[in-house]
Structure formats: structure tokens, C-alpha cells
Length: 325
Image (cartoon, rainbow, N blue to C red; front, side, top):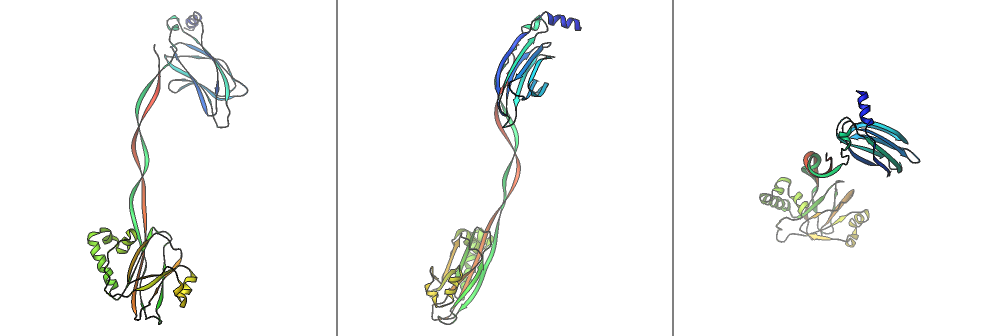
């Protein structure tokens, strides 16, 4: 059988497939595709100028390795026997950003097994095919939102008439992490009763008030509905955010304090964060004593996120090689 095989090849002449010089750059590859018939004998030589290339491979399409060699400088007359018809390709690859480019030469010949396969068309043609590729991808999703409420201050003070224990400082300290906070100030013995009634009425039409309370709704929206008593007494108040203002408030220099506010009922939503311990100074400028109530609450919104695998797809267009034999 060996004798007949040698005799068959002896009747054919090698055909030059390619004699190409090309450059392979950093982390890239160059590939040369051919179609071969069963019984073909492929002989090739490789030379790399000045250095070596990371690897030279010979594959049967799509990825069956027939020959592989690393750190190639030269390959002389390497012969490979083709076992069946198909598409085959040479691959030259360089790896690493700093590996440098290489100039290579490939010479390859084909020796057909017999006259019948001598005319086999070695040209590889390409066509575009579109496929739907399914894959799983992790994505974040919102599990729930927690509303964390801190009652910072809820205090009542009695202020005597002007000139006699007519002032008081109410301490409060906001949490380090918050999104907003609210303050409510009311005067008169019925102030807290009015607050509770307003909270009860608003809870009927506002589920958020029913679930979290009026101070939380104030912090988040800044709006509410209160009724002031006729003839209520106004209290003067300041936010005392530094020691100098606190000292002024406790002396007759209170009149020099800026940002004075006066109200018998007042509320606000604030987004700023006052660091550390702070004070609200309340001051009675009336000729009669008065009751003052102060509420402060902070709100932090915490989003709890999870990860889930989601089935997705993409449309891919690929170049597919084929033969015309």
C-alpha cells in the first residue's frame, strides 16, 4: 500500500499555494485558509525575520489542531497528510502588548494524491450568516426601599415672660447619614393636640402619613395642613449652630443674632446636614409666659438591591467559510 501511495504522489507535481510575506502585530494574528482533498500532502516552510513569533499553528476548521509550535524562528519543509476533505488554515499569532511586531514568510505547496483530486478547488469562499445568540447576564434590581426614621427631638418648654427665664436652648443631633429632616414648632397648651389631630386627619387621605407619621411626611414633602389658634402667641427662635451664637443667645446680645424667625406654628423640611450637636434657641418676647413644643425628625431612604440572572439574546452576523467542490 505504501508503494502504491508513493507511486500515486510521484505521478503528481507539487502546486504552490502561497509564498507570502506579512506582518503580525502585538496581540494579533494572521490566518490563511485553504480547502484540501483527502490524501493531499501539504508541505510548508516558515521564516521570521530578526526574532521569533509566539506561535504557528495549522488547524482543521473550525478548531481541530493538527500542528502547533511555539516561539518559532524557522520551520523547514514540514509535511502534513490530509485525512479527509475540508477547510484548513495556518495561524500566526503574537501575544502581549509589548511583544512587538514580526515580519514572517510562509511558503506552502500542495501535492495531490492522484489525478482525480488534482483539480480540487483550494479556494475558500465566505458568506455572512446571522444567528440569534442566547446568553445569561447578571443585572441589579431593587428589592425594596427602607425608610429609616429617627425622632431627634420631642420637647416641651415653658418660657416665662420677657425678662424672667424667657429663653431656652433645645439640643438636637442629627444622624451622620440622612436624606432629609423636618422641624415643627408650636406654641400654646393645645399645640400638640392640634398636631395629633392634623396627623390623624391626613392619615386618612395620605397612606404615607398613616404608615410613617406626619414628621416623616413633612421631611419628605415639606407640606402639611395645620390650624393655628386665634390670638396665639409667637415665639422667636434661631438655629444656634456655633458656640458664639449660643453665647449671644444666653446674654442680652440675643438681639444681634441673625436669621430670627417668629411664629406660633411653623414647620419646614430641610436637606442640609448639621454636623454634631446643635441647638434651637426659643425666646419669649411676650409679657406673659408661654408653652413651646419642638419636634425634630430625620429620614434616611435605604435602597436594598439584589442581583439576578436574566436571559437575553443578541443578533450576531458571522463570516462562515465554505468550499465549491
